[in-house]
Image (cartoon, rainbow, N blue to C red; front, top):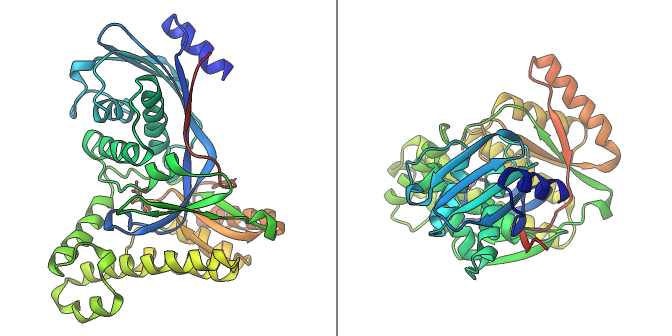
Amino acid sequence: MGSLSNTFESLYGCKPQVISEAPGRVNLIGEHIDFSDGFVLPYAIADRTHAAIAGRSDSQVRIASNQRKDHLFTIDIADVKPGSAGGWEKYVLGVIWSLNVKSGLDILIDGSVPVGAGLSSSAALECSVAVALNLLLDLNISLEELARATQRAENEYVGMPCGIMDQSVSLMAHAGSALLLDCRTLSTQQIPFNVAERGLELLVIDTQVHHALVDGGYAERRGSVESATEKLAVRSMRELSLEALDNARNDLTPEEYKRARHSVSEITRVHDAVEALEVSDFKKLGELISSSHDSLRDDYTVSCPELNCAVQTALNEGALGARMIGGGFGGSAIALIQARDLEKTRTAITDAFTEAGFKKPRFFTSLPSQGASARFFA
Ligand code: GLA
């Protein structure tokens, strides 16, 4: 962290007091159901965002980023409330606001989670700030409460009606495991995900189609699920079975029915995926991953031609399963492949993208990594 603290010192004239880090995520399965009291199975990736923070004796909040060294954002703590100025800084301000901080701060961010790739760079940013403030200000807030606070920051300060998956996994992930998260209670179970041992690899394909969830169809899809929940008089999609949903089909618009069918079937797929992982049945896991994609493409309609092309090409090359991840409308897909097929899969996807006239995709692989942490800077 030499360079982060050096940049901090040259920018602010003092050393940081706390340095923290928080990862981005991929989601194995359980998409668009975190806001429906569903279960999800994401894991943290190696790419993370670092935050360096020091307290100030006045009421100024100053925020800078290693990625944009020319720009220093300054605001009085009294003005940190929804509707304030700020671009990306709002993710930081939102956390300061939701943790009810009352004194000035100097903050430097260094992010390496690709932005707009569906890998939760925003949650990584929020969580890096949240764990740093928790330590610096001795707030003693549990990880569950930090997840709720960072979600509130994004919902109410940034204006994106996201669920709680991204923040929870960034905070609670363990290396080597996927995180089974009950989005109602925030109780978790670490599910070992040892792909490498089996000669497998989880390939992440960034389509380079940048999604803007704040303006996109995310809220509209969530709205359909919520109106279906209301019409069916259930607390959430978790209370519904496919059978009950089919019986009530006439009470819903065709759109609400399809959105709800995705939610209900996806929750079942998550439980089935956990069972498959418990017996190391990666073939079954792959099938579930692919069915999740079909459901997101056809029922939830949040895929796009680039994501479909990446998924189909990976499957043609022998992937055990593939699907879009995250909010959709762009961003990334994952493919569970034989490690020996890595090169040929990447080449085939790149060729298919060129042929279709799409932007050149980017590829990542990442084993499940550790969640956020913070430490005093000695
Ligand atoms: C985005 C949101 C999450 C979740 C996913 C879809 O990443 O931030 O809360 O809803 O989309 O599963």
